[in-house]
Length: 63
Image (cartoon, rainbow, N blue to C red):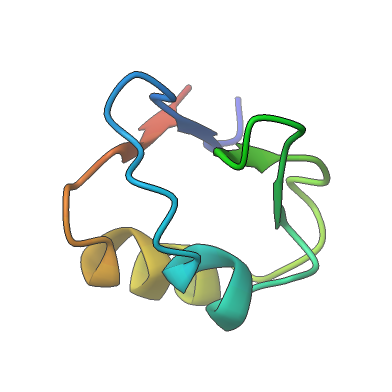
């Protein structure tokens, strides 16, 4: 099974880093929290870079 990113919205600080880095995968929701709207919108490497850049480490992989 493929890895799929998800955002722990309780931890998200609305910094927008993930959206800026991989806008094909992440977007801000109506509460200005990051969410995954298209897990196939970027490469695993691009998503991992966004995970690593998140200042509060609220993006994770699930399998």
